[in-house]
Length: 112
Image (cartoon, rainbow, N blue to C red; front, side, top):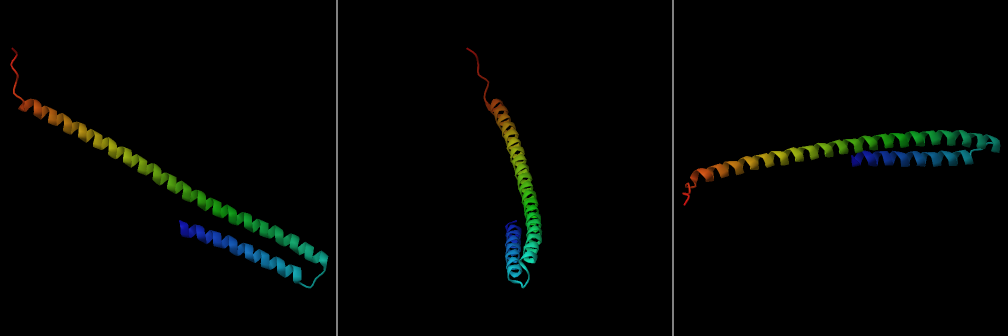
């Protein structure tokens, strides 16, 4: 899980670096100010969309991971409860058997 998360974070940093590099390339390209502003506007819209898409993907994967951990924890709790209930019943049976055995071995007391 951690490796996947680091991969997505790396992807986001890569996209941010690419956006900065492309933005600088637009600023230093030989064209008019109006053309540069239009290209920056188009590019910023594309970068914004890419960042939103990347965020949604990371968010979706994080939610899946959280759901998996939650389900595993719920199953573990159920298993522990079942184990404790079984152990409790086993102890009850053992205690009852011991008590019965003690009653059989104990001599009958005579009433005076």
